[in-house]
Image (cartoon, rainbow, N blue to C red; front, side, top):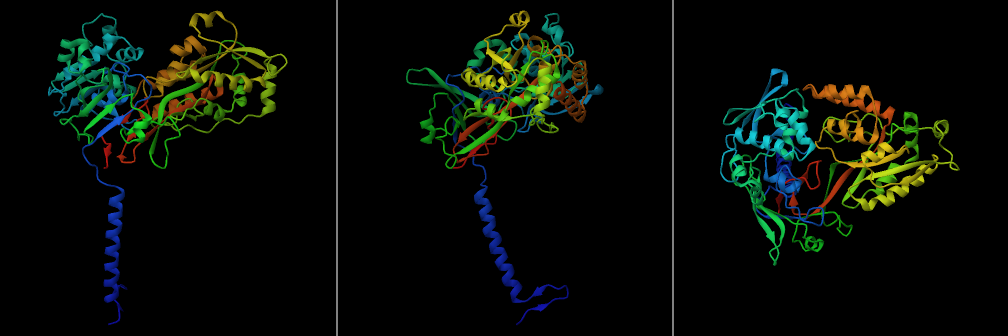
Length: 538
């Protein structure tokens, strides 16, 4: 029988049956293909990771300087950051804001327990924060304390407790801030704000961190040792009682003594991309942004760098991309940035690209300032503060050659102390490689450009009453959009004043085995990996 046209113009008869059958078969094939490409996570398997560096870091105190990979998965804070640096719930199931943002009430999860089975309570959170303020080991702890009601008095030893940390109920903590601010949540999400069990820490003191107890997705198992029983690494195991979905991985081992050949032999799964011998065709490579920033600053209080037009003119002589290549390694490479705030921070999208300058106008500006003559160059000192000091000679050599055309004779100096800089009237440039304490623009802009900022006050001496005013304004308020607009306004002023030049932010490269799935990193410290969602497909 031939097919015919139905009342709604659709084909009927044998042809449509064949078509539908073919479609169903094709759909099944495509569905199977998709399932093969995106397999479901499998629980189980052990992950072995080699961190950056050659020495073992055994610091397991969240207030210390241990491996982010380890500490970040051992402990949990009230809130935490996701892959895009957004604030999401941690131990706090939810929170409420009142009193115009100065009071925030956190409601802890009822099923949140420490690894020893003890329930996480508001008293533990209060204890953990007050412990930070007693340690006084990092300036950022003072910043944290000074923003909470009664925190500064406690820091100074004038009060037995922080009055702004109040236990409303066993699972309810109230925090009274001196000013309402989005930044307050970044303190709570920081690694150092991981919550500890008050009782065991008080009774065991420093011994607690030999076998610590947290409430994170993984718990401490034991120290890895070699045949001579020397500690060479750390082993964590899955927390079966984690309050959220428990990790897929069964265990994680971290050791700097794992070798590249171990990776090639498939005995470890993650390693810094230390060599181009690691084939991208065979292995996966994870590139993630880091809060490691490079700037070139000027002595803004000394002629000729006390003139913004001179500082702006010198940017025309520096090829940032070549400089980025000199500052990069295969595992830690530099991405050029034209803004003082790195573009990957939440909500911040820089306006415009690098500034184009007319060379003849640049030379005229320099000539008026007494520069630009290669036969009579101005002596300028060059100071460097870098993590990898082996890179300094090449970067210094590049800057020296580039600035010759500007009539500058660059001389490399070591140090300096703040007192030495204050006594010397020789103009200088300062190459700063630096990581802010928190992933928030305030913690970049305040220390570098506020007149009372620690680095600016001691090293660069840049002064702008408008910048000071805007930085004070952004501290008070809970409007995200308002803060972003204030930061953009600050950026515009800095582009005109040019107290320094933004150079680049760093990216880390990690290589990992093809069967390791869903490995994610956060743009903070080296090897800051989220292992909750990673899994092994084999």
